[in-house]
Length: 48
Figure 1 (cartoon, rainbow, N blue to C red):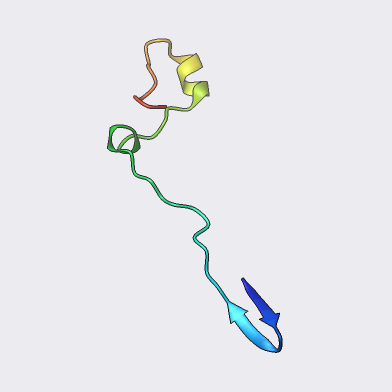
Figure 2 (figure 1 turned 180 degrees about the vertical axis):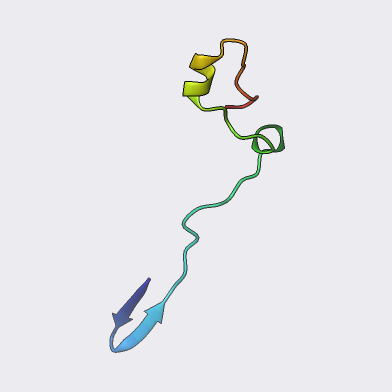
């Protein structure tokens, strides 16, 4: 963010988000719901 204050140009940076890696979930992608509906033998990957 940049703004002026009494003729001085000020800039600050703020972290908008923090990436979080969850090993027990993020190694596998979720199986799309359509695929789960088509094959009742499938189960969703853990954490999704």
